[in-house]
Length: 118
Image (tube, rainbow, N blue to C red; front, side, top):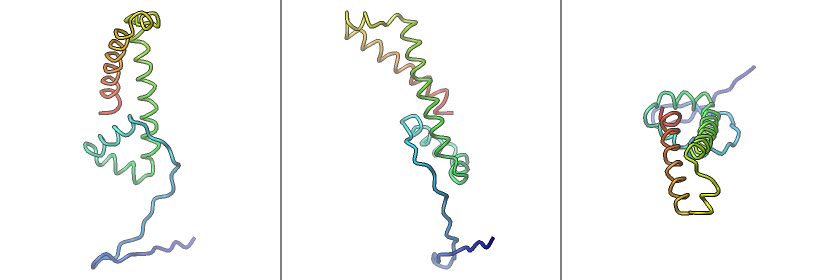
């Protein structure tokens, strides 16, 4: 197998023309984007290793999926535990919205602490 490496001159240096292999197009949701921002800022070596090994997209998609599942499971469990029902929603919509917003905020904090900012 004959591998030919090409170079581009940058000032006084010849740098190899390196390209990462094509990766599948995957939509990364809000959780994955938050984690990406976090690892870029606080774990640059982990970020670089994932990027250069072509595993970053799959890694972020996995984190995003796990976080989404955890978030919805927590919201459901907390709503059941606190007795927030469809009946409450029809009887007192403003109270239902306030309590569900509170639950969603708590679930977001838990997901952030357990998966996103670690």
